[in-house]
Length: 132
View 1: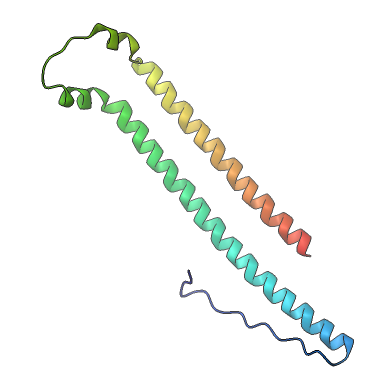
View 2: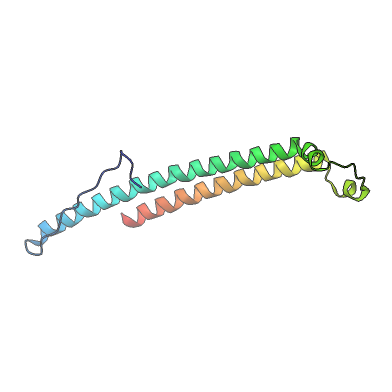
């Protein structure tokens, strides 16, 4: 998937004959161009990954807030006949427990996001170091 900012990198073809130094320079030049192209692709993937994590976090937060604020309203709409079941009241979590679950989920998602970003950064630096 190419955007308007991307362009094709032309890599010089190494001639089979010629002095060793000329071929070595051409090869080094092509290596540097490949590394540049790979680094730009990794940078683009990092941006996409960060955006994906942020969007996912926002969706989960919106879902958690919706569940915290609207659970009683959705249950009332479903039940058109007043049926009294006392066992369900015992099984339902309190507002405090639901809030704590939502906060724990947000904390865990933040930690997971930080770990994934750190992993992506370490991987890209390790790749850059190994290619050097």
